[in-house]
Every structure is written in C-alpha cells, then in structure tokens.
Image 1 (cartoon, helix red, strand yellow):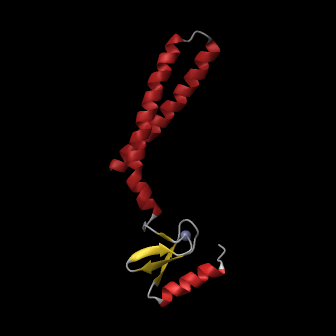
Image 2: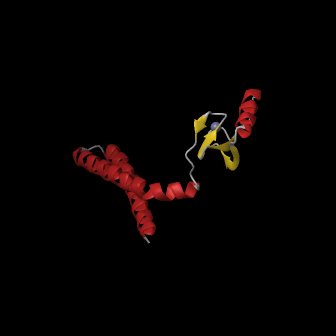
Image 3: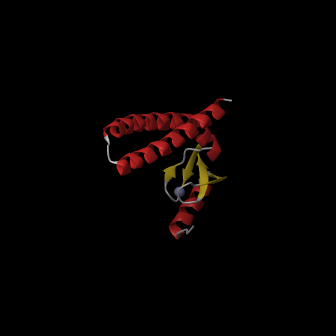
Length: 120
Ligand SMILES: [Zn+2]
C-alpha cells in the first residue's frame, strides 16, 4: 500500500478531530479504517465502509442463494441442450452436446449436494 502525504494528513486530521483508528483495513485499498461519529470510514478512499465481520460469514449467507440460482440456470441449460440433442444427427455434434450435458449434470449434482450439506 502506498500512502500519499495528503492521505496521512487527512488521517491525522481525523484523529485530531476525534476519529478513532480501528483494527480493520479497507477492502479496497488496505488502509486503516477509522471510526468517525460511529461510522467506519476509509479516509484514503474517502468512503464509508460497511463492516463485514468475516468473509466466511458473507459467503455462508450468500451461498444457498447462489446455489439456488446456479441450479436454476443449469436446469434451464439442460432443458435447452436436451432439446438440441434430440434434433442432432451428426455423431460428433451429439458427443459435443453430451459432454456438455455431462458437465452440467456434474455441476448440478455438486450444487445440490452442497445445498444439502448447508441445510444440516
Ligand atoms: Zn480505502
């Protein structure tokens, strides 16, 4: 991380006016985060920071939703491709689509088993 004089200036200014240095760092620029009037600020980006405790917490909260979306998308693709497959006659084309279907089924089954695990 590179700090410009004006950044350091702004940070020391903030500290003088009552801001507190927190142990958090900015996810964008890795500068220390300051608490200003109860809000977290990155003074280098000059932006308010929404605090996220743990990356894994966010991933954990988002994952079921993401997996649901993924399963829906994969199911749609499977439907389209099986429609396509029924119209194909060229063995190499059929193999191409079959390979893709197989890959998609793999994704779907992984997604479903992951969802299953998350429910427990
Ligand atoms: Zn920043």
